[in-house]
Each structure stands twice: as C-alpha cells, then as structure tokens.
Image (cartoon, rainbow, N blue to C red; front, side):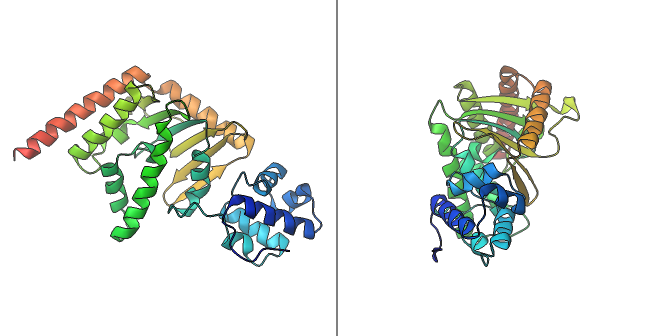
Length: 279
C-alpha cells in the first residue's frame, strides 16, 4: 500500500517508487523509457542513493498516475534551506570523495567565510528577512564542514581572476576571505588554480561548474547560472564537462603561482582597508 505521509528520507521515497512501479506492472527499464530517465537512475532512486529533481518527479507522477506525490514529497534535506535547483547537488557534495570546482564570479559556497557569505546572501534583487538570510547562512557554513576531514573529499578549486578582484563586502571582507583560501592552499587541504584575465576566453568562462566523484556511484556534474542549475548524470554530458574543466585547467596558473596571486591581491585589499581606516 502506498504511504500517505511525507517520506522523511530518500530510502522511504525510493521504497514508495518501487511499490508504485510494481503496482503499475512496470520493470525499471520500462519505467525508465516512459519517464525519459536511465534505468540506473531509477535504480539509484529506489535504492535511496539519489534524489530526483523536480522535473524527474513530475514525470514519475504523470507516468505512475501518482497525483503529484513524487513532486510534493521530494526527500527533505534535514530542514536545511537551499535553492530548489541546488538540492540534489548539495546531497552529492556531502558524499563526494573528490570535488573539482570552477568559480567564475564568486567564491564557491564550501570555501566562503561567514562575513563573505553574509554579504552575498544579503545582496540581490529579491529582499530577504534577517531570519531567512540567517537560515541560508547556516546552511552554507554547514557545507564547509566537509573540509574538516583533511583527506576527503579531495578538492580542486579553480577561480576566474574576477573572483579575486571583485570586492564583495569591501576590502576587509575580501582580506579575510582570500586569506582563508590561501591557508587552505598552503596546508594542502585544497588545490588552488587561477585563470588570469590575460588568458582571455577559456572553456569554462560561461558559468559555475562542480564535478564530483564517489566511491560507489558514477561521477556527476553540476552547472549553474542565474537562478538556475542543472545536475547532470548522463555519462556523455559528465565527460564533456570534465573535458572542459581539463582544458581550462591547462590555461590556469599553477597552484604555487595562484597562491602568490592570492597573496598579492590580499595585500592590495589590506592597503585599501588601512587607507579607509585613516579617512
């Protein structure tokens, strides 16, 4: 019998999908063809290893005549507040053994300091109450906890030079943020690369990319733009994202050169902050 209450975990959600699929007399392969998803993806959802995105859930509802169940009761994220398009990527982020990031405009969430993150979340076209901002901030800072384990996940962070140069929150906030990344790079907790302005166009210029690898799952790619994001699991698309990352990495400064640039820009912000204090 189908459950009536909101499943509190991906495992319960997956069990519900299996019950409804079997009640409809469909194999995983047959369902995958009807909802335009891979059989492997269906199997991962039923096994509680993956969370479908909203469009996946809507197709499941339509094919299984579930009355909106799969969209309404998407597994929760322990009450953490994030954009809908990022929910799947956030779950994967916490399980990844290796993450390679490219940031075109802002410091990635897992590397943000509290003051930098607060400034980012306080800005934007849509106003937020203090309570909403603080909930988002708590979630963002929680994501950074994955770096407390020195060995896993392995993290490579590639930045467009614009990330260093744009003074989010002013020079004091940027000093703290850039020092944080330098400290992580100097301790070898993360590997840092910068794509300088002088390189001109490069393969990842168009938007944010996160590539993730796992012990028991195939790799995924998450790409993001303004108010939108897409989690890619199709192997051919993931490989294309990986190729683009590798191509851009070939144009980037080395880890050592990148840290030197971070230090240099930090000194510029320090001098600017000191001048502002004396005005």
